[in-house]
Length: 357
Image (cartoon, rainbow, N blue to C red; front, side, top):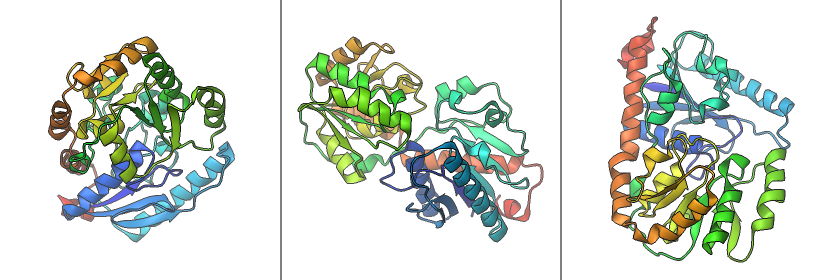
């Protein structure tokens, strides 16, 4: 049995209805670990829903300025130290892109999963000075971008609850975007492509109270909305399942290099083709012409053409790809393998680590 301390990003709650991909992955991972007899302790902001033991950190109120973020990171670090004092853990698994701001004290192995593009991390985060600190990517493309790096372990592809998205079939004529409202997500480009394709488009995702995100929505998104292209706001898991089952395609128009895209994986599990810009790991996720279409980066006209062409995609090909590559079992087993490799590499195996082996 492994006892693992899981650390979430301080500003986003963990749970099945979580907005962020890292928070969804953490939720599914710790449930999978519990199902295999492992114990999890989770440090996350209050309001999180976890399977194991939750150590909640108070949520901060907007605006998310530098002082507020520094304060919540300090509280996160305090909760981590408290957890390590109260329980003997085999290792710590960190999921926030700012993980280097609250690394645990020396003495326990740490895995930091890099859910975000490498450029989002500080140089010190990617070359940690702290001993027994390891990194892993979530796609082959991201792993290659980070290599060579002697702290880098094998990548583990993100999984989704494939079975939960199967069985529904109520296709309608709209395209769907599932993403938080932020400039790098390319939502303006998706709306422009939908207009060119004369397609209905629904945008579902949370608008966080960051000033830049609020400005982006007000100035670049709201003017493009109309009766056929609508913003739904944040949605829960059940509504997401229904929308994915009804959509003719899911659009992933990211302007940053996606490291995996849970939305694309969930779409394929639903038998729904994906259209996207050819960026980052999306070229690994989508088989062009089989499970969707890839347009050249920033080619809005190409994205519109892809939205018009999706009727040629076989839904069963999408579902088969999801079952083969993106199951939760495959992801959880991948992380258990990394955990055991970390413990073997640890220069100073403590009693808990030795017992875990």
